[in-house]
Image 1 (cartoon, helix red, strand yellow):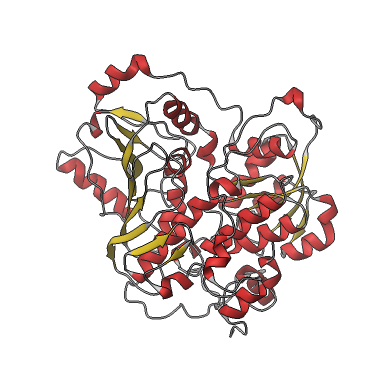
Image 2 (cartoon, one colour):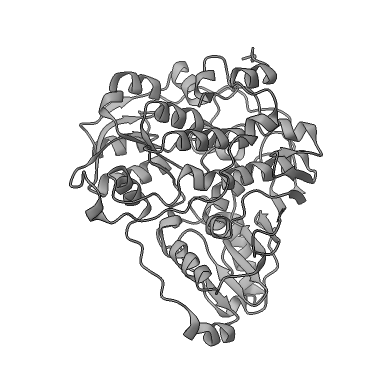
Length: 499
């Protein structure tokens, strides 16, 4: 489907004529720290939040069960373009009284007055229009990470949340309500984590798109739609994206590997590995993004491997800092001395990357064991400060000081870490009832989502990018700068770009 709106016309429609104006208006890329409000200080307790679940299969089913089982949500509607799928039907059985829809726009037209909050657990690229539609109607939003697909969309979603402070927003990086979140804050406040100069983040599990032909030169050919889905349903699945014929390599579940639809391993797992580092070290946006290693680069889907260097300036009394991100089964980072002497805890609620242990992961682990090497985790982080080195996992898994001798020496100085008052889903629902503040609001998460976007632009351009943090522009590559906004939406979807 040909786009009839040029990029310049799109920006003019939004009331903004240059990329700098588009993304330079919001000064609040700084972290807004959440705080807990004492329950006795609020009204409206002892009730349930009327929720609609948008996206109810796969990850959406798991999130939906969290809200259903919380006892704090009343599910009044469910929405999914593929309602006949097994995953959707299993969720529907849990909430048989909820009204069913295939188009979120129809659901809002018919039930807006009955809905207080929505779950948005659909492909990355479609988060933006659904979240904006909900917020335009005054509905609170829980959206899966990585919040949105493009730099510009993250900016608009954060602006919309700021403009409507009564709306509750939460991004689904659930570790942000777990031990790692409270530990990181406590250790930073106590001066244990300080003077951080470098961070390594890695995700070495197989991805669903890795088996795809690295020499692909076009999008997949059209296939018949799944049983129960119509052309209209597929058009709704596409939302703002340019038209693509249906193919099982997009739906269900494989969309994340395609540039047009997802944010790859960085957006998927970076949200669970780098989130506390980004927030509590007040990183904001980088000034340089360098794709130092890319394997099997192509124009359609994410490469087999990528290593990206993000560089940040000093912030207050904190020194300049680098983050180096590694993904790909064989693209391993260097591990510091003492890394293998401490076994990092694993969040037991989190499945392995890709949902199951992929063949590449198993083969690599077996080879490591045969060679007498330690079996290392497929994902995690290493934090280097001037005095200490920390080993961490993903999601809510806590940090450990390494090597073990240093950890024992530091043990008497470590502060007590408070327990989380609520998990990520209950935190959202209690915030809707005025009892808590969300820990991963759109304002908090937006700069991290934009960091992911910048990294992916650097991969696609395969070129070092220089980013002006003041004007919020890529200054050394005009084409890359245009990718901050990406392509205009399809005709009929422009209204969601209004704040």
